Length: 129
Image 1 (cartoon, rainbow, N blue to C red):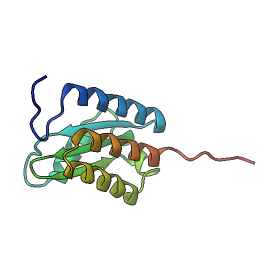
Image 2: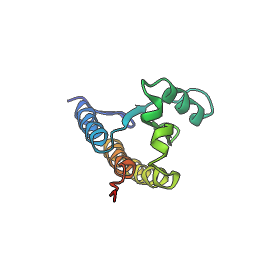
Image 3: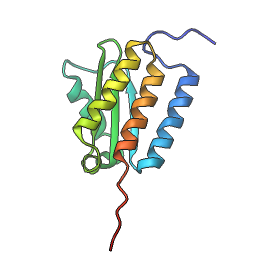
């Protein structure tokens, strides 16, 4: 196996990330997308939002953007997702990811963050009388 440069995902990492995304989508019924690479322009949030808006179902989607060179993590959530996932919960997931990234664990950080986002976005069970 060829060595992987910092900020890149190996084939094994990609497969593990795909599995984490599938599990997250099954858990909360929202769609997850991950972009790892350089953000275009100076405004990484605007770039992440543009990518999110290009998704098939942006209202039901979560986009996680990681620009390893700039050390930036952006999470963009659609309108339907925001009904279940608060900004504070997104911030907690970003902190968890950033902690793993700082330790050099890109794939682990993404998997952990996606799992946290899915857990928090899971619709609450309600009992009807």
